[in-house]
Length: 236
Ligand SMILES: Nc1ncnc2c1ncn2[C@@H]1O[C@H](COP(=O)(O)OP(=O)(O)OP(=O)(O)O)[C@@H](O)[C@H]1O
Ligand SMILES: [Mg+2]
Image (cartoon, rainbow, N blue to C red; front, side, top):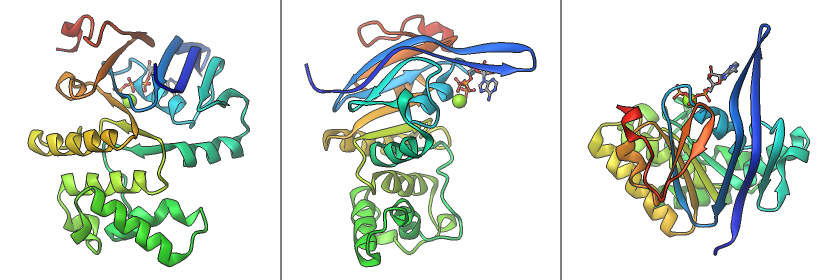
């Protein structure tokens, strides 16, 4: 057994809309060890983004427990939550979320602005991260001067710049063609090989199969079956 990085137990999340209560997560439990590469797969409305917000410390459990590297997330105040989020989690989104007026390297540097490092040090770290994703020669390009796959690699470099142990990706290949998707998944596999724990959220079984472990989410409940998704037909 490796070292536990995420321990989620009986986590519940409900949304109240008007007089109605929607239970988005029903007593979810998930154990993740350092260095894992997990895909969470599920159809629209199954609770993927809700779970992603929980794992990413953007939200707190209503009941149940979330321990992230020994920190009891449910007990943190908003400031502590933001701090732990910056230290532990790198976010990668479907639509890259790059700032269009900033160059590639400036986008990668952004998370460092809050850390107060010296400008020269920030530049160097950002350049190293761009090199890690194979974009060392595109530092001065604006997002519009990059292909979709290159933009996503800039976003991955940005997610890496504070050196978080966990990378959390929500449909990272959703906006890309299949060849480019493969390149992005290869970058994620390489980063996993370098020690980052990766959690990949997707509705695409082909993408999920690139992970070492697949967990399925359906109607706010998790299912796992020896790495193979149960009831695969539900997705097609
Ligand atoms: N802010 C909210 N207020 C009320 N209900 C919400 C809210 N966010 C999500 N829900 C409900 O919670 C459930 C899970 O939603 P969630 O966004 O987590 O699904 P998802 O798996 O990410 O779907 P998709 O693949 O379409 O992004 C859905 O029934 C949704 O209607
Ligand atoms: Mg979603």
